[in-house]
Image (cartoon, rainbow over all chains, first blue to last red; front, side, top):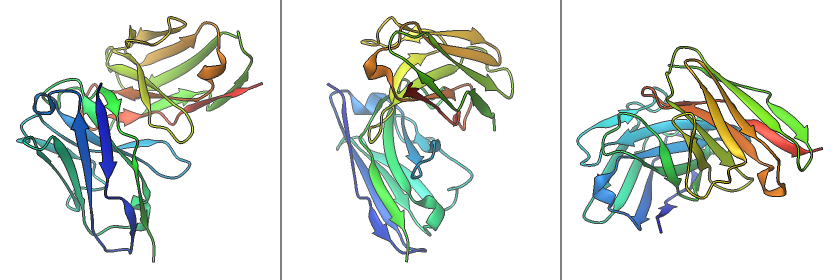
Length: 122
Length: 107
């Protein structure tokens, strides 16, 4: 059974940093690209970032480019999102999602974690 | 970025009703269109990929159609567990973009 378990969310002040983790199990993690998607309270879904199976290719939404960094440790089956210079508008539930392919060529998200809440507020 | 527009934003329906949700893309995305279901407090769940490919375990009451820039999600007979918010998403290019969602509520 595929499982994705996010952690690392919490309350942070504007300008602060957080590192999210997503522990994967139930599939060969190193064979699939992964994404982060967020959802602000009461709002829709917004794609944030994606990474290829090997980690050699990364992609970002314009809204987070230069502030967020996606990475993965295939030896530990874990996906990360380092978030710096956080803003109030980054407040959201952050989901990690497994993609159906190795490469980030077409982002079909077939499994999602339960999400972790990030709140940016003073 | 490709803009995805769903209609309606919400609808009220009864168990057993046939429900259709429309999703329009701002450009031709061929059949690179996916549908997700989200229940309150839960993660989205992939229902249909590539316009019409039903995911394993998804009831056959769900179907998807369309191509190019206009797509539909149809629930042929609404069940109690189908009351949720539905999102379309294009996977034609990066960034992938979502529609704003359609909330299916109890009439």
